[in-house]
Every structure is written in C-alpha cells, then in structure tokens.
Length: 554
Image (tube, rainbow, N blue to C red; front, side):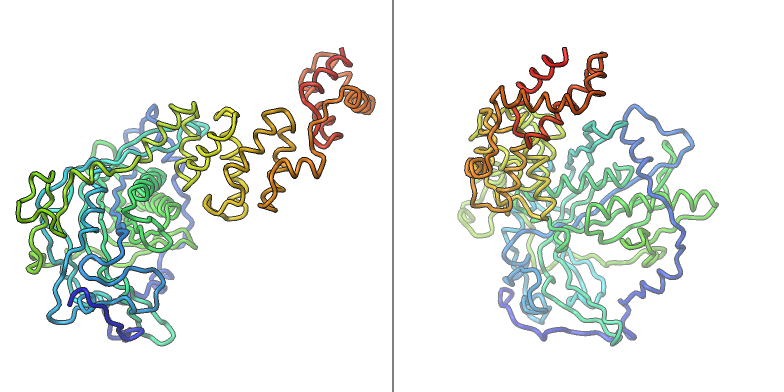
C-alpha cells in the first residue's frame, strides 16, 4: 500500500486563526529594528588571510551549517510516489505520504546509495549499521505528527569538505580551507504550507511530503558569510558531480540553516542564533554577515543575544526573529518500529548468502569504485595538464559544462590552452551571461569556436576581428567563421604598400604623438598602433604595423 499513489484534494487548508503554526512575520518585521547595519565582508577578508591575526579583545563570528539536500531519485524515501517540482498540488501523494492508517514505509535503496556515495566523497566514516527514529513535532504540513529521521546513529559521521575562496589584498589569491562534517543522516521532507492572508487560511500541499533528504551537519569551523557560501558552493558541485542531488537552490533542492554566534578567540562560544531556510549562496553570505554584525553591536550596547530562530529578508538585508528557543522542545524521539536497522556491507563477500542479489542490499565496494572525478580533482588536473592558473580552473569547474566545452575546444585547435582560456572564460562566458544562457544552450559549438581560433592562430585574422566574428556567429549560429570572414572581407591586411599609406596618414594626423615617441615615450607607440587598427577596422597585421611605425618614427 505504501507504493500506491492517490490524488488528494487539490489544496488542503487550515484556518489561520485556530492554527498554531502560522507566524505573523510581517508584524514581527515591523517591530524589529530597521537600523541599517553594514555587512562584515572586510572582517571576513581579514580573517581569511592566515598572516593576519584577530586582536585579543575583538569579537569574531563563529558559523556552523545544517544543509538539507534533496536526493535525486525518481520516487520518495519510503513510498512509490513520484518526485517532481511544480506538479499540481497534492497530485504526488501516496496513502503513506498522507499518513493513512495501516500504511507502512518501504525504504528506497537509491536514497541510501546516494547518501553513502556522498559520504564517501566527503571522506566520512560509514556506519555499517544505522537506525531510523521518529521525531515528533506538530506542523500542519506533517500529516503523521512525526518525521522519520536518524537520531541515534546516522548513516555516516566524521567527514570533511575542502573548499577554496579568493583572499589577499587584491582578492586574487586562492586560499584553501576545510570544514568538518559531523554527520550525514537520511530523513523525509515535510509538505509545504501556503499562507493566504486575504482569506485567513493556510493551504497545504503534500507533494513534497516524504521526499528523501540528506541532512549534512557542518561543525562551526567558519567565521563569516563568505566562507560559508564558498563551502556550500563546493558541496553543491560535489553533489552535482555525484548525481546525488541536483542542487538547484531556487527549487528548494538545497536549503541551508546557519548557526551563528560571536566570541573572543580563546573564550567559550557565545549564544547562537539559527537563521533558517536560506535558498541561495549569496543570501547565505549576506545573512550571516548581517547576523554577526548585529550580535556584535548588541553586545556592544550591553544587550544579551537571544537563543532564537530567525529568517533572512532579502529585500531589507536583515534577519528577522521567528521564535525563541528558551524552552527546549521535547521531540520525544523513539525508534521507528516499522523499519529494521539499515545495514551497509563492505563488499559482496560480506553479504549473507541468503541476501545476495536481494533488492535492498547496499554494498560499499561497488559504490566506491563508481565515484566520478570530483571538483577538486578536476581543478588539479586542469592546472597540471594545461598549465592554467588556479583561478581559471575554478571558473571552468564552477560553471556547469564549461570545463567540458574548454577541453573539447583544446582537442580541435593548435592554440595553446593558456591562450585559449581567455576566449572561454572571458569572451564566451561573457556572451552566455549577457544572454542569461547556460553552457548547454550555447549557440556556438566547441568545433565552431575552434575553427575561428584556428583562423586567428594561422594569421588570417586579428584578435579584434576574431571577437567581431564570434559576435556574428552568436547572432546566426548556422554561420561558420570562414564564411563570415569571406563575406565581410575581414581578412588580415598584410600588403606592405597599403599599410605604409595608412601608417603615414596616421602619423601626419598626430604630430604631437610622433614628437612624444621620438622624445622617448614608448607607450605612445601602442596608441599609434590602435589608431592604425581603427583605420583598417582591426584588419592590419600588428607585427607589420609595429615595424612600419618604428621605422617611420626613428
């Protein structure tokens, strides 16, 4: 029965006046202090530099994260209901998801394998036996009145995530850091509450109820929003490379809770606040920096920092109180009676004879062998194989599909990778950003770009003309570079007599520049070369132009 899907009424609703679960955030927002507090980016930058030390009495931020990653699976964690975004309300709900009496959970092996693969990629210790528990709390969008999670023993513990961010005075130095992963646990998601203020009711959509989640708990090893955002972005890339989570934060596939406090180095950690459900890396950075500064200023005024849950308002840039945590909530954890212990086997030899080939058996050996190339390994390979700068490797790996595009172009052109990288990360990526396109939607194929760069490498067109041709190819994807060059007569002008006349005309028109060059100002030569290129619409051979100008001004 757990795998059976039923169409529930389009939208369940709860009267807001009698509901305990509706929070009038707008009223709280009006009561909160609206004083503008600047973010602490400069504070974070100084902390990111290992050569700089915090002053003994200076308060610094301490940040830990709890990240809920939606597992990339066709069906939910304990039922056969499909997983889909933006489906009609309550159209993906099984009897088990709706918590009808008599229904039982059936564990989805794909979700377990996704959690184990993620744990292996993050160097976690895999618990060969873990347990499921019921966590009781009462929300309108939690039909059973409890969530199935892993409280006693999670599927994996004690891992780490290496991430990098830009530091230094010019923000151009790659600085590597590590954050510890306390644990990774499997649990089911809740439904979604939609508040209708005009009708004073809350609508309930259970499509998301029961979807498999991995909760990753990061230790408080970060000190500012920039570090937290960099760690989340790196985790997002790891999950996408593994195929265990699509990581689309705008669709709620990756949701972050930030635990923030401040203290003086060497002293105990301060009272922490929790900023809930942040759905973008940029907002995460801003929310944490605001919250650190807010706590520092509150302590500076002699006020106490409350142990409370807050939310981030992206419009005002402030965190807003939701509820306090003064009274510890009793979740009444108890073992889930309808699920046996989750057992993970090291290899096929350790699987009991009666279970070999069984549907629900999870074996570490096969999952470990199937791990793909992870982002950190990709970056190291790009630097080693192509001689790229570390910051270029970050751009290629961080932009989905860009590394594959770059390597495809490298295979089809004689141009050195270090010269080619600018075309991919500046020109091509610039066009993509301008038109709000992903790499997969790029109208210029790797082979077409390689053909264009071959023309430049062979000396048939200048770099200026090459950029112009790329623009034409972008506007008309069917056209190839040689065709554009031929139709618009953009080939390089190498005729010495023609360039002699153009150079002389430029020199005659700018006697002041000629005089400055003859007096020893060598930078003027570049200015004159630019004027010649302007006359020829970027088609003049730059080597020949330089030689002619030097000859005529000597």
